[in-house]
Length: 100
Image (cartoon, rainbow, N blue to C red; front, side, top):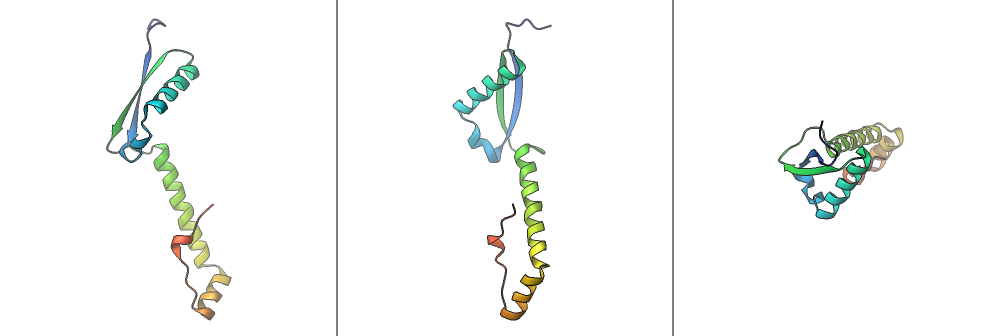
């Protein structure tokens, strides 16, 4: 068993695409939060990795992509949209679609 005077280590990988989040202030806040959460002194090390697998940022991006795809599909099958396209040559600007 490790004596309580020694800090335990938590190692985290941060995806290259979010490396801007690695700041001294954020690191200190994270280390303080982790120590309070585990109710013991914790040392947090953050390494930037070229690629991570299924991190929360990537998962949220996948969810957003699915919502966007669903919204596009929904609009392309909507009777009112179809009528506007047929009667007025309307076009959907995919850049303006925002899934919520």
